[in-house]
Length: 116
Image 1 (cartoon, rainbow, N blue to C red):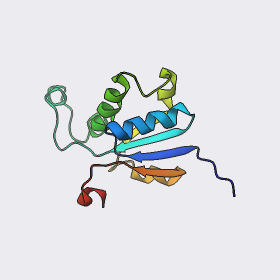
Image 2: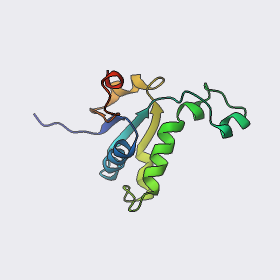
Image 3: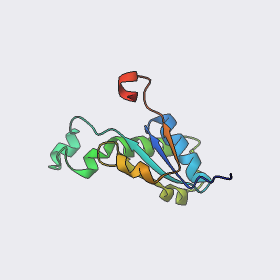
Image 4: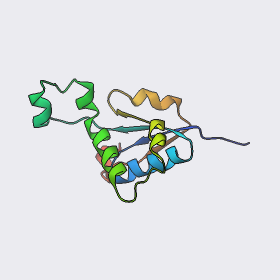
């Protein structure tokens, strides 16, 4: 039986998770990159009047991690247009989306309570 992987979900967007997401995007695979939501607002978010319920806040960690990964030298993404293959979200609001992927990869911190 031949299987093809067209979409993957990566849970955990740190250095390793974001790098894996970029490598899958490089080879044409659609990626759903998820991480946890923050526990508190940053000073900038508070000044803007955002709340912990704001989507931009809820996805801050995953977006910051991916941005930092893309800025690394050398960048793990081969071409800037490949970034469009990566969709970010959080494990609270977007976990149901993993039902639509072919492969799920867990790359969270090595703590059993979190992995469960």
